Image (spheres, rainbow, N blue to C red):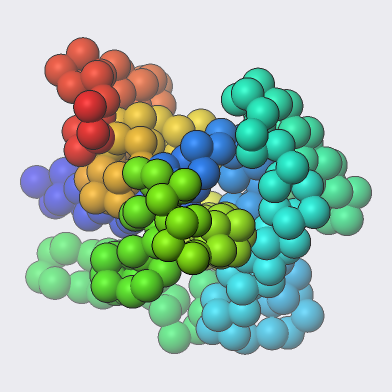
Length: 285
């Protein structure tokens, strides 16, 4: 039973990281109706910027605070200079330009840091394990669960209790109406895109001490993020949270029951959800 309890807790931790990955993608699509295939690249940048900061002797806690802001600022700039000009185009253009952006960023990572992966050490205060009787669990993974839960509450407040959140929710229904109310829609678009990229980068920073860094981790992250968005429902904050936890727990538990098919079960779970609820668990029909 300890093994299964360990895998369930692992699944919650992984699921919360998946939530951070997916929620930005979900919000961006919900407001902008923009298919962002560069989302995994921002996760990749977050992980590698954290790795480089630690190589330079920067404290992990400082990297955790500043790396998402740096990646968010980069995404804000990319949105203003490039992506804003293709919003009105068909989704094929969105896919083409964001896939190109993702490939450019991935190749830049390979040129700067090399094609091989590297390890990232957890902060000294979170190394080691916590013991409850016969149950043992790594401190860092417990921190990830707690930190992402608090961040999820803060993000929920931003989206539900602030003027920006009201504009995002209204814009997802009708951008024309928001414009008529005197709100600068393009400024909201830029902020939402930067926020989505920053949350993906935050997931990359938190994941780096768990899985290390390697140049192709963004592709894997993008696939997982799209699965969670589909399972939870497009444009749904709660759907991203529920979908992330569901996929994380399924993957973690199946890695014990059927290690070879753990990744396959992610897509089987997605197919099962779509058969029962074609718009996702909490999506709007």
